[in-house]
Image: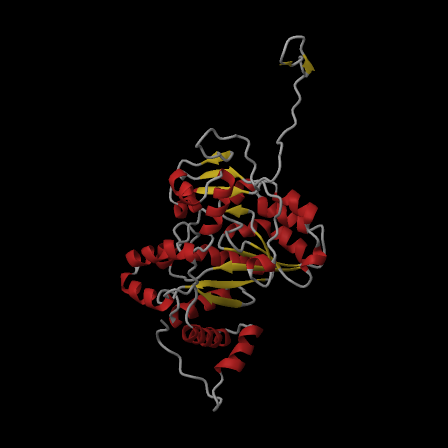
Length: 375
């Protein structure tokens, strides 16, 4: 640039210089190459689109680990995807997807509702955000000393082995990065048999870390599963995956979650589930009851009213304005799970054993009778 003889400024001929993405000031976590026009939302980069309408959008991140302080949980977590094609009606991660999309596109509140092309609960299943650079970021930022004795859990919000993983392989790339370290406590949660693709990596990691794979399944009844989890793998496929993991030497168990009150909490169904897990070589079975946060409540309660209308009013009364089940229900469910764990030869969780000893023991030492229906 130079001063011209006449008033004004003239640009000399400059060679083309490509500098890539330029960030000025404070930016969001997403790569946003297109600057929106007046009144228009930003557009995320589309990586792929399926005929059924699902789009996969690039999500660049600066931070990949969620600390216990930020989540309120007793472990660190990492999620390679935001949104999930499995579309489980009870999933609590819908708000996470909505907030991430709003931040990326510069939309909030009413603007988000007006500017969105579909309701947020559906966008969670149809617009999958892909953290394309997550492995690179993890390799640069992971400090094992910060984790201490806390676990690092993969897949706490959305399934790390959902269909997108077949193409983008982000979960596998995370495991490859973790293989460069030593002495971590690593957990994986998934509904998908695709986890067996990485048996080789899981075994290699097991030689350097404490690795646990939690296969998530709440019922063996495929009809009930389909009514709750619209596109998740069928129960038999998950039990086969658990069997393959166990036979290969991976430390794996069954995560019965969520246990849906009045639907999947019956003693007979839970017993069948534990028997199948035992036959598949599961090292443990643990379970937890359904929680209904704002996003899950908005999606699940209308679905419940359609699929299980006789439970709708009982849910409204039971959950009320709280996210979790009542203390009485939790105590009854804990007793049921522990009895079944004993019957099928699974070790009891130490935390639950202590809670039973402190809160559930009667003065006589006798166990209370088990309720046929918990809700």
